[in-house]
Amino acid sequence: MIDRKPAIVARPLGVADVVTCVRWARQHDVRLTIKGGGHNIAGLAVADDALTLDMSAMRGVWVDTDANVAHAQAGCLLGDVDRETQVHGLAAVLGFVSATGIAGLTLGGGFGYMTRKYGWTSDNVLSIQVVTADGRVVRASEKENPDLFWGLRGGGGNFGIATDFEYRLYPVGPEVMAGAIAWRGDDTAQVLELYEKVTANAPSELTCPLVLRNAPPAPWLDRDVHGKPVTVILFAYSGSVEEGAKLAQPLKSFGSPVGDVIQPRPYTTIQSLLDGTQPKGRRYYWKSEYVPGVETELLTKAAEHARKTQSPHSAVIVFPLDGALGRLPEDHSAVGNRATGAVINIAGSWDDAAEDRQHIAWARDTWSDMRRFSTGGTYMNFLTEEEGDARIRDAYGSNYDRLIDVKTTWDPDNFFSVNKNVVPRG
Ligand SMILES: Cc1cc2nc3c(=O)[nH]c(=O)nc-3n(C[C@H](O)[C@H](O)[C@H](O)COP(=O)(O)OP(=O)(O)OC[C@H]3O[C@@H](n4cnc5c(N)ncnc54)[C@H](O)[C@@H]3O)c2cc1C
Image (cartoon, rainbow, N blue to C red; front, side, top):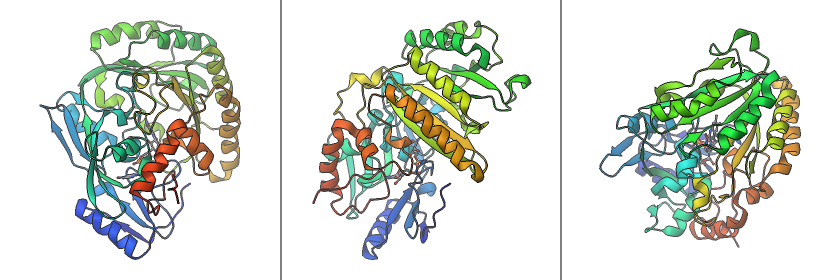
């Protein structure tokens, strides 16, 4: 759905090339865009007639096992980092689909299976090296340029080009108890009741996203449910396999599942379990909202709307985020939204451009109805192309004014404008 034509695509091999590109773009008054993983739903990696910095040649990862820290270049995909850190039984707090770029995800906040325990991805970043709007190379951390560091942890690509990230790592895997389990649509009410119970009592090492959709023709699901409504619970436990098996038991023994692949598996395979649901080339339109928690009415409504989609690929997904986020103050860093219990993602997805209108309408209608459950906040990284100023303010809430201050200091001319833009003062 993103059909834009940059004038030039540059593929930097290192920081020096990035600096050259920034200086060149300024000198020639050319707009610059940055492509990390290229996953942004609003298509912010590219713009017509721009210079696009494609970071995909900068994908090195170095793991320091003494300090439990990984240094990752900004062109890495999530899977690159997981692959290297798992050699040592370690992992960073990253997202659910391995082809997502670390840069866009981390700069927007970032969440995944370990967020309930450790917080936003950006809460677990120790430093970021950045090429600024005037072509300088600086490091941002709690000690160096702390105002920039505050803004980078949630403020997206507004302040400069990140060239590497330093992540705190945690012991996890290499084997974990994880996977997915599904039941027929007819059992939805009982499964939602179970889901509420399981999530209410889940230790912080356990994350169970809920997926409401029509069953894809996946080999792990009974053939007779393909194309029909199913309720899927994803399960990822980052502690021991034995403890994970105990926690999975109430799910496994409930009713008559139509598919169950919760099992001991390499951590990297749960990190890529959803990859197949998000292939390149499909059409995607999302609407999202943060909610304080998951309760019966919200879940029931979400299930009702999921049944109305005419697409075999669309889904309403609930990602639990309660726990560690709330242990830091709202103004700890730009990302904020620390009272969030979950994010609802209304994920429209279909094949044929001729059906755009109907599937976009489904996502919008669902969102309009689900909005009443919102905290008032939304995830900047899930905003679509047409979601502008008002939604950007919603995404940052009380941190928005301070973001403008940081933008005014570090990018007073708004050189970095192809992003969910925070406009500098003056
Ligand atoms: C299938 C799918 C699954 C997802 N799953 C998750 C998830 O589990 N958790 C989660 O938190 N989010 C998730 N997201 C959202 C994701 O975090 C955002 O789409 C994010 O923007 C992707 O980063 P990227 O580098 O791939 O994006 P790109 O499209 O390459 O870039 C997005 C934005 O980031 C900026 N940017 C990229 N690289 C840099 C850089 N080096 N320096 C400065 N700015 C830069 C760009 O300017 C642009 O504005 C998912 C998205 C998709 C499509």
